Image (cartoon, rainbow, N blue to C red; front, side, top):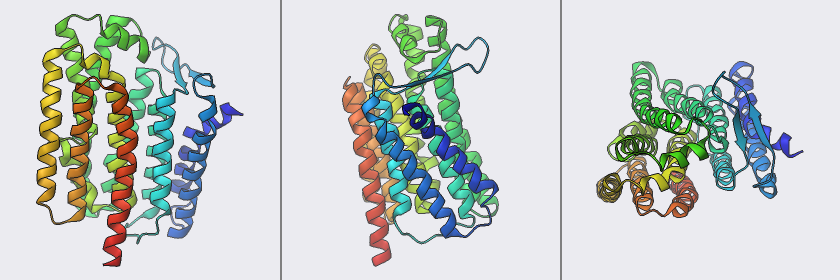
Length: 345
């Protein structure tokens, strides 16, 4: 039974995404919304039912590329709770009755569900290649959002701008993965990170720098918050969940996993301390100068990224994970309450 719930975390949103994109593309907005609600609620329920199986629960092992080794997805506590929080957040955002301002709501829902499937895979993957592919799919969904909801050339420009910035972060991650793989002889995340502690200072610096770049871009820290500014033109579902929760959560979870390596490289640890503190302070100062509520929330998100990076630089690994859970709830409440306030004004 647990294997079925585990597979459902990826399969249900993936299949629902395809159903909407290919069969319900011309369906009414209410029909698409009900499918989105059902798929996200079921996914969150499956994650909830898997909580008792944490640690000794089922694992999915697949062989994909020759020579890459077995790719494992397992029920680690932190990964499953992150998947649960992220899945529940999209359900609650969708449940909130908000006006639809999208040109093609069916495609919007399809992109959201595909991103949910990829995010859950990334949280639970114990293999660097599997996580990298999942992160690539999630990044593609984030970039596709403006292409789906914005008209004309503005959507196309936004797509390329977002995708190229996210690819910059992925390049840093890929560089770190390659060095860790060479040092450990494996792409399994846990042993690769353990091998990272034995690297010389130069190679460790390249690994930590690449990981920090990936994290800072995904969490939309200043000045990489520029890609997240396109979210203010999108529907609430897209902005609140895809831009303000999914991408930052994926970055924060990566930061949580690599925090021990950051503490081993003193110069980059100091850089992370100053970047986190300075980025958070600057983002909050800019937020105070904004008049549009969605612009304010973008800079609040950038400030949250800075605080999480500062926490990681202080070697408080578990605090980073708790921060991920807290900022998920905070972002959800801020977006829903601000939207309700605007509609009641």
